[in-house]
Image (tube, rainbow, N blue to C red; front, side):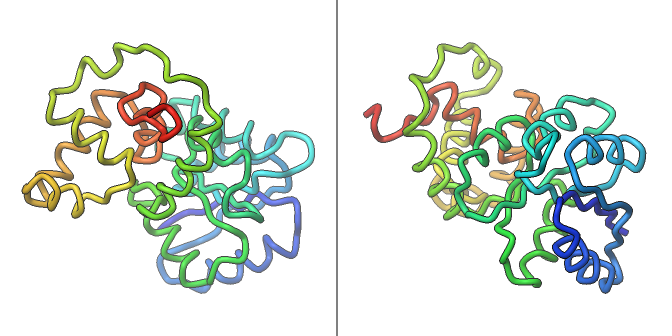
Length: 221
């Protein structure tokens, strides 16, 4: 059973999500909160598999709540999905950087929401290649020059190559085709790179690829 926490200051939104999620045999809502501080408290108490987190809430907002959950080792199994009205909210990139596993727009189709919950509960990032490319194009151009880092020294040359392709928005299957590998081998390389770099999921791997300069925004040449 996938356990979900709903964090949104609009009761009607929470009610709609709750009704949809609880109708599924493999999903149950274990809590509802209206602000980020409550979200963190309930996450610590219930340790849900997935938190659907509105990024804009009064008091402690979703970004700060995501940061606190991401920094708490006891909540390493809790995956945050950011909910936003716009598909490229100005805070989304920062949310991914501090630990969110992905994001959804609030008017997403019900079937897509259910799929998203299941994807994130498995530990996968909710970032399709297309979304990754758009997200990076929008926000990487606003970032500063990538900082010099030795973080990538722990990776083999092959792993660096694969992380760069993840940063460009390629799926495991696309990476496998590009490098003439089996999808299973590509997935193994991605998983090993994530462990070595200490990142929670694929979303953070994308962010790290840009922060370290492994992948460079177009404006940097």
